[in-house]
Image 1 (cartoon, rainbow, N blue to C red):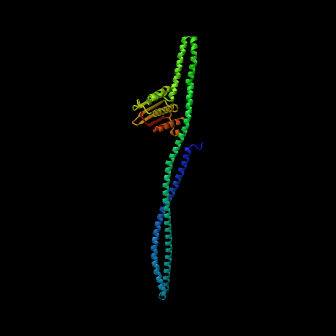
Image 2: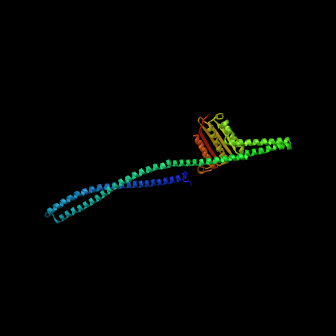
Image 3: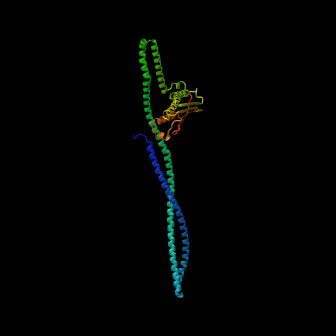
Amino acid sequence: MNSNKINSKVLDEVLDKMIQTVDGSKDEIFQIGEQSRQQYESLVVELRDIKTQVSNVIEVGDQLEVQARLARNRLSEVSKNFKQFSEDEIRQAYEKAHKLQVELTMIQQHEKQLRDRRDDLERRLLGLQEIIERSQSLVSQITVVLNYLNRDIRQVGILLEDAQQKQDFGLRIIEAQEEERKRVSREIHDGPAQMLANVMMRSELIERIYRERGPEEGFKEIRNLRQNVRNALYEVRRIIYDLRPMALDDLGLIPTLRKYMNTIEEYNGKTKIHFESLGCLEAKRLSPRFEVALFRLAQEAVTNALKHAEATEISVKVEAAEETFTMVIKDNGKGFSLEQFKRKKDKTSFGLIGMKERVDLLEGKITIDSKIGLGTFIMIQVPYQVV
């Protein structure tokens, strides 16, 4: 493969992989955001519970602090005046003060654990909140990138494909020009040239036939010679007509199209061609480049229907509105797949591409619709100029 040749298929494959990768990353980031959001909600519930527990523990701790202080005061009083109290009273005062102090210490430790847990949850919630916000931002940014890849970059692929088609079409034009030269050369050689050579040979025999066989045979040979000249003239005119119909310059587009359709119908025999003109264009003349382009478009469409679609019925309708010239060509041929048409590089596809190029030069629009087994529909709309 020529490395310099534009390859839109490779670009599409690379682009598809990029889109898949970016789309996959978007899904992963979205999942991370969803997991973080679920974890955040769970931690919010836990933090709410922890704060409630801290509040309760603080309340219990405050009560124990009061009780412990009273117990310590009681123990201090007993210790100072232990002779006034019995041994059981002293022991009870000590045990109560010790018990309350132990409980207070435990509740303070529990409060500290709850506060540490609360602080840890708040730090984690801040981190999760940041992750959620960043994931949302990244998902939005990736969505923009995906839209760009799917729309703007994909458009580049379409433009490259169009450029490749034009590149191939340019090469096809060169080949077609050479083929056309060969065809015209072969037709002239096999047709008029052979006929004229035969005329030359027979013209040399006329005098001998006249002397040897008499006037009647001589005049008969002259009549045959006249017919040969007439046939040669017909072939020359046919070749000239294919190259450029002189009726187009003399009569204009519509009469030339009508004459051409009648000629093609008579020549093919089995194919019925319907031609219809609307919009009073019979007597109007269009710009020469416009008439030539439209004639070639009709010629190409009908030729495709006959040679490639094998149609038995073709309809050609032209209509002139106020500013737009419309030409519709329909056939009942075998049709084709539009998707396969885009990938093919045969005479049919290049013929249709050539039609599109002509329409683009006229700043018009061409619509092609075809399905296998259901024929082909072509509509051409161009702004026209009347001379």
